[in-house]
Length: 248
Ligand SMILES: C[S@@+](CC[C@H](N)C(=O)[O-])C[C@H]1O[C@@H](n2cnc3c(N)ncnc32)[C@H](O)[C@@H]1O
Image (cartoon, rainbow, N blue to C red; front, side, top):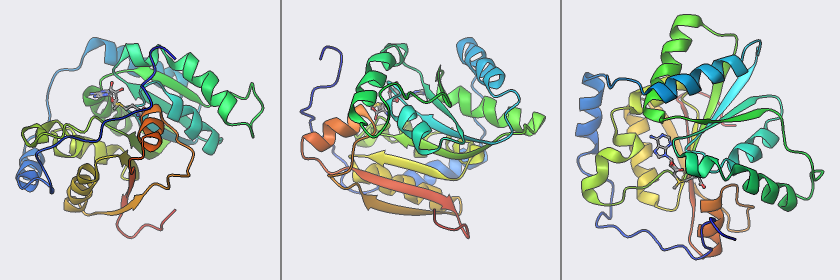
């Protein structure tokens, strides 16, 4: 179908074959200097609409960051019917395709009634570099009745060239803010080194990480996952949690 990723996915092309040697230096630098870039107006507005949506909610919130077309936001909302799920992506082009993906999702998950699109999710167009900081500030200042209990980062752009280390979430200046929002994080990728580095970065901040393969027989929950699995690639999943917490 037009505008959907083709089923044949190229494997990762990289000149980096192990976790980057500069990762810890980067993390030390980010720990010393706070990220101060000014907020984009459109992300502030999107953030305000999220706060309005959550008004009166006294429960848990799950973030689906880099949600792309938001197919995973629906899958997560189904998995956690008692939480509010927020899908966030900066790409209006991707988010605009949500309705066609939500109908695919309806058709594929035949155990659900065809019209059972969950009501417990919303999608936001926002730059996560601003969103995470706005959210942390809001939580600190307002102590809302709701709580972020988990974050998903599904198939983030891998930036696989050695020189692109600083663009990966775990090596970017925003990483301490990501962990401040919520320390239970599920990250998926078809590039194992990305997740190995993410695990090293989380462990640097005292968290625990567990890295596993995704079973090829498992139903994909995002278009990128579908494309990678369909072309025979291995996908991986990293679960981050605070030290001393029970495994889900
Ligand atoms: C490779 S796609 C994966 C999309 C989806 N999770 C999937 O698996 O189909 C990565 C997504 O991250 C989004 N993204 C990258 N940087 C972002 C940022 N700073 N703020 C919000 N979204 C971002 C992109 O727009 C893109 O949709």
